[in-house]
Image 1 (spheres, one colour):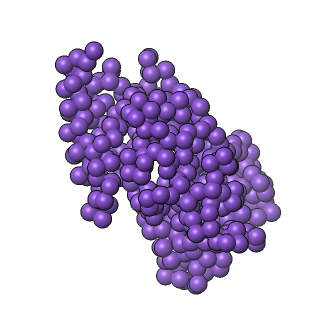
Image 2 (cartoon, one colour; image 1 turned 180 degrees about the vertical axis):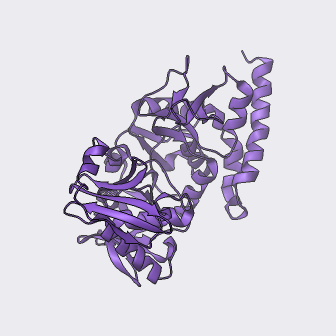
Image 3 (cartoon, rainbow, N blue to C red; image 1 turned 135 degrees about the vertical axis):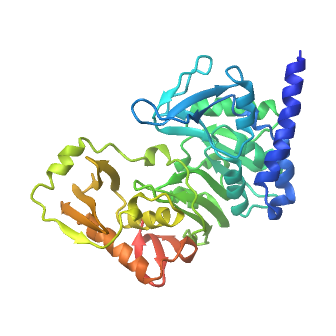
Length: 398
């Protein structure tokens, strides 16, 4: 039996959906997407989530506060229809939403992505009626529902590596009348039972494009994915699959990031002081490059880090004893970067001169006029995965 409170909540949710749609749907996306955002009740897919508190935890980490309809119905419903990402899980462990506890730090491993980014991904995938679409990463199911509302459930296959996440998403989707093909599966392997696809859209970042995605895409079909790595740099590409099994396409403008696929996340590198001990006999050098390329939270810095990590795909960036350091567990190499005025003092050790390679990329990027992502092209063939720009050396992602 529906109570008066439930009816009022649904009426308010409907108003909030219209307000959200007005914020996240641009004019050129009005065809189908406006009505989709107005129709899909996001709060049904986010019964519980975490929001960052204003102040950090006693340990200095982000203090995440649980938000549910039972704890704070007003805050919960308002946040569900705000254009923001709602974190639903940390470190691969499902919270007890009946008795949720605040979280001190932690690595987000599942979320309901901010709606404007969801729409941007679906729209940038250049989809059309009648196509077979594979979504990598169902998450809460909200993005899946938008695609079902826009293109019909029969067009959508969605896979999720976390069985508990998929169970909750399925309950919400089926409860609202959407019936896409859903499966618990590692999206890095695509989903052969429903292949081939006209579009593959990844709601996670990958270090390199899984070749099985290319094999499961029809010639002329497209793959949209975000490329990430262990230096917190990101690029995004829309690849077209060719008859010969190769694929190529441009990087897209803007800075978009998703969580790395779980098996692509950075491995632990052990005790940081052990790595610094390798630098004991290293002779320091100085350079005029800025540390901002490694630490700044700007669109240009994120992309520049993506270029650097493309040249150093197994290196990680971290802070040890207040110094920014590059650590490469695959080669046993390390570099320490310490600002000194407008210069950097650098110490390096190991078989790979990590800073030297990073500086080569920075110099080439500077000489080319600091081109943005849209000036680059990714090519995948039997020779590898290569990032190309006419005025810069080719970078290999593998």
